[in-house]
Image (cartoon, rainbow, N blue to C red):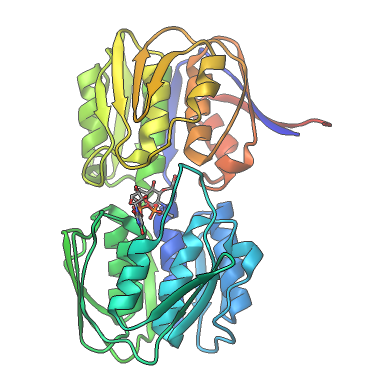
Length: 419
Ligand code: EPZ
């Protein structure tokens, strides 16, 4: 069995750079299927989910070549099938982007229902609504989604719930459709803007990304170009919360500070010292921190993907805190792991009440990607040794995590033990 062992209780010092955004990369790489030519994509994070999506593109007939550690070339000139490999597709959530991309390019797609982190029901009805509005049929049989169209024509789509995945998928399906598509109540996350910028750099006409109305004018063809993925807002936030939990003085580099506004304001409210520079943020802590209240929301609100890491920090600071999860139905499963470290947290539906205290190291599990990041934060703040099982979840979204964390003083090692 593989584990990450962390010895906690030491302040952290130094600099750590943020990699390219996972949730942008796992959309932009499939979006390259829309391009009848070569896309050069830079700042690609070296994580498991990216390797999986690249493998799926290769099996669809795209030629993917690594130019260096973080730059790939994708040539989708000669796609050979619209059928995504079932086993790979069912391993990750973002495989649903193959639906929009293949539908847009080939007018048909066949992709297994997506897997990924389990936060309760994760429907794709809004993706379906968008594809149907453009003229496609959608059927789901035995866990496989089939989308087909004779012809795609732009239309208006109102998203009943703000959905990141549906917003991106409808953009992908619409860029080569005839006429205009308007997505209303669109999600505004930084990676929505990044995907739109990528599509435009390849020849598409997408306007309004980053607002709640996105307008797409279909083009006949996209022919290729170069694009660099934005830094990962969630990785940046994870490192900032880690530095707040450990104390010390850490410079988190390669950040877009605007994306961090909501987190910065919360951390300052708690007593963390923060200095913003053009593309980095310094976090330091001199005194004790105070508890606070947090409610997750779509961007620009507090990101659900930082909720577990925030709860880990709040478990260690003085006073009471309240965290309300308003995006997912069931994203507090990992709390059971923090309780093993002596945390004082009570969960009632979508609400967690936290009484901060000193945590102590224990054997815990990474129950999903961000839950794993939360265990790292708790482990660094705790007294003694924390052993984190299932680190493969963490590897899905964080590049070379132990080497990078060691560079700011985290005492972390990966161990392999016989079962
Ligand atoms: C994306 O998931 C991210 N994943 C998630 O990050 C993130 O938690 C989530 O957006 C919210 O920010 C990727 O980008 C690959 P949604 P997604 O559609 O697109 C409801 C991480 O840790 N909904 O915005 O699947 C849904 O139930 C991962 O990196 C519908 O009702 O999320 C939820 O309540 C985990 N019908 C809400 O919308 C639909 O058709 C937001 O989901 C789609 C969604």
